[in-house]
Length: 128
Image 1 (cartoon, rainbow, N blue to C red):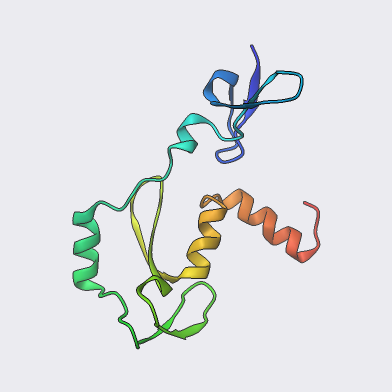
Image 2 (cartoon, rainbow, N blue to C red):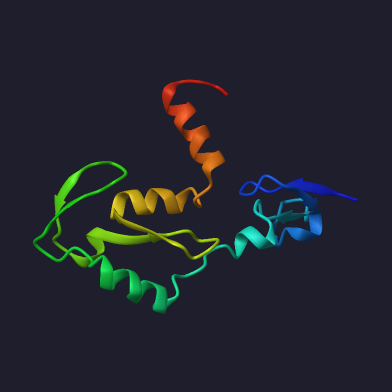
């Protein structure tokens, strides 16, 4: 039985757990690098949870000053999308507001701590 490691959860799973993505020049099937479970990971914030959070933690308004808890940059909100309500894409739990750059960065890494740690080591010049 063929197996493959998921780049997101790092589990070794049967090849059937990875969707077909494309074919190479030889006509062989190439499968996605993330398993079906991780591929469906993007869980939206339930509107009831978002509304409850925003009642007690109002979204920063246009013209307001906002300090991102991740990059610690202070910015003046010019557009609503300058600040995002971040959440865990697996559980839907809200983590809080972050700047758009940090939210995009975490999204590109699919909230995968292992990949983020490797990126940190890469930036430090370590090959771990």
